[in-house]
Length: 391
Ligand code: CMC
Image (cartoon, rainbow, N blue to C red; front, side, top):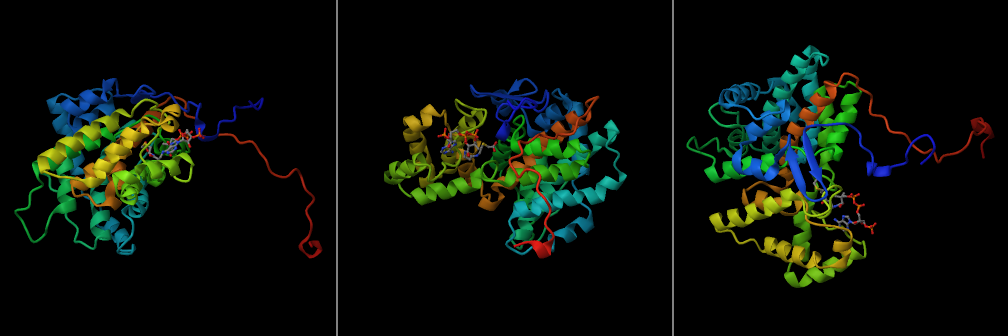
């Protein structure tokens, strides 16, 4: 306590806002608008969850149809936006492209957008949801040197994303396998929101200055990219490749315990029991691998590593359990998603949570700029010395 304010680096005990969108707790509970994630995964589609997060309640059939149509109508991106992709090198990381192109949306939409108007704020949410999977799929195709595929109004939201990712322009009979759509619906739901994570906080702080929503969302994309946040799932597959065999797990864990390495996909600021999303993803891996006849030796290492870690005092004492990123990479790999797109998938789906949180913040009667304090540890007042007198 400084007398003036609380010193809380990393915001471990600071509540920055009141929100009714998602709730998570140490015991491993996650709810969206009061519905448990386990039930939503089982019973709802991603579009229903999108409606729920944006408007507070689940839609009836006609509300859902109108909502889906509105989003599809916003999927086409401006021709000029495509020019941005030409500036990137062929091997540019798709997240680098996402940071720039999502921000660039501001220049196409912001001029005509009045963020003080709730109707226009709602419209910007629809625009963002429509354009995110398109921008992401184009980022992938550009970085892979492949021709761009346009969205198709006949396809669902998730199917459209997969269609834009994987369609072969030479094969008009191409259809995204049903099982891929089924699993992606669930992956999208699981990543949609998780209260005030770093990227959501970044969006809220950027938006609190009354920056336009697309610039604010690009702050979220940038924050998500880091390996301690959404970038963990990309790094985590390297860990298992490095471990190589089950016999090497103890030696690797010794390095983690000596703090020479971090175990990616383990630990969470909120979940101090087990991340409920990790439980679901792990189960999805077992089911998908069985259905597709996949044997993934790295997955077997991960299972064994979890088993050993959860018996080890280093992890139990610190309440470190698998988080959502521990098993997601295996699932995405089985669904043919290249590694450099793992975090992009997270960004597409978390953009729903970001824009819902941005709208919630913007609808508050009194909005305050997000502006933490600091403890100054620099010099006291010093006398200025002219340059020719300096030693
Ligand atoms: N491997 C080894 N030790 C760890 C790990 C880990 N993955 N995570 C935390 N610890 C240790 C940490 O060193 C500290 O030890 P000590 O008490 O000796 O100083 C103790 O556990 C408490 O950790 P913390 O750093 O205070 O925890 P935090 O709440 O600040 O950080 C975290 C949470 C997720 C950033 C961290 O656990 C981490 O870096 N995990 C690895 C990266 C990762 O998987 N990130 C994805 C998070 S979930 C998806 C998302 O929402 O982004």
